Length: 212
Ligand code: HMH
Image (cartoon, rainbow, N blue to C red; front, side, top):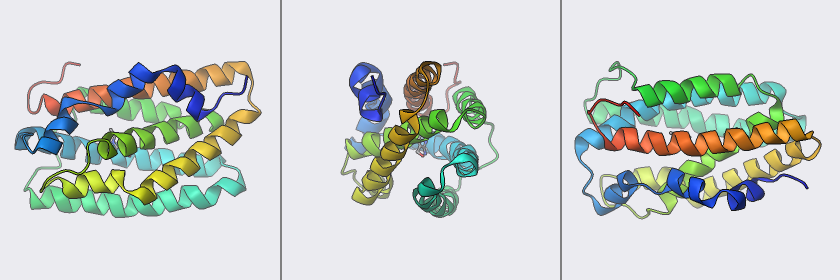
């Protein structure tokens, strides 16, 4: 049986739902999220994206040549995204040097480890991480001000197309892999679903201690 990204989603619907539907997003959409909750997400996610950028670089190091165009477009988008995060943090007068929360540290360590894995496993993980935000923000769109641009950043149609291209690349990388590697890719997918849920919960808890 070939393993595909679509197969992972249809095999684990409840885990994926928990990764992409959360009161944090629902309350952004209702405009009732508290600033301390939103700002917690913003600062921690900036630190997440820094590590995610390093993961993107590691994919480029091992990808087949035909995958580079899409991956490089992702790197260009990440350059803009990191600058945008910094602008949002400055606008809100937040301190970027506040300590990383436990969930953010765990997710960053997971990505550091993922960067050491074979390309097909990394390609699945990279797709899943982007899909989580694409679906999470899109399914809670549109959002009222000041959250409109946040929902649009990951929910927009061009980003959806990019995530579909990542799925196609992950599918083709999975094609010639053996069963142990397929099992590893599935485990990575499930771990990401769980970490995404934890990340929303961390933000939702706001300033409260993040004990997972
Ligand atoms: C936690 N998951 C998390 N943050 C993000 N910015 C993305 C996924 C998408 O890159």
